Image 1 (spheres, one colour):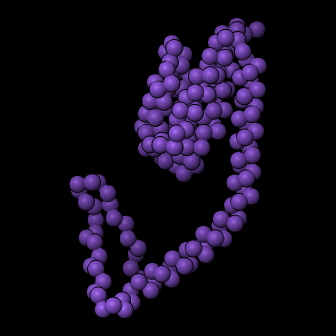
Image 2 (cartoon, one colour):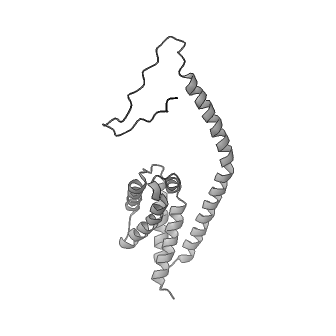
Image 3 (tube, helix red, strand yellow):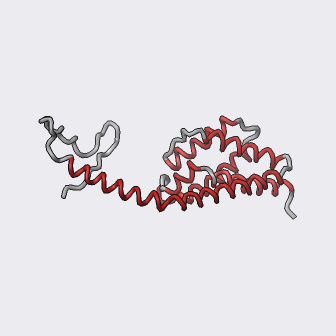
Length: 183
């Protein structure tokens, strides 16, 4: 039989998985490959890193947890979180850790179940709205292409169209200009 400490650690790990798995900012980063080809693996590693961070540090403050999560998201997914969710995720993680340390496993387990239900409901809602979004985005794309075709026509007020910006990269800011291929 596992020791209470090992059980608490395992339950906390499940809690971290549930919290990070239901964090929209992380899920968007993973789904869109912000972390590169190994985005999913990075998210799984992040669970381990967060768990280890809590196990290695005593009495973490919310801002310390937020800073750690922000650093992970920035380093691994090139993502800055500015939607206020860092505070919510940090608070939930700290609550789970405290409850696991105090032997309140039932409360943690209950919260994990609720998080899983919310995540499932969000997937169902996203799946239902997806067909409507796809058709509207196709219509928008057609309208956008038409607008692009019309932009080559001379303007009515006689003003000359502005010259296109120079191609290639601007070495100062590191951005590269991507243009539509000429027909």
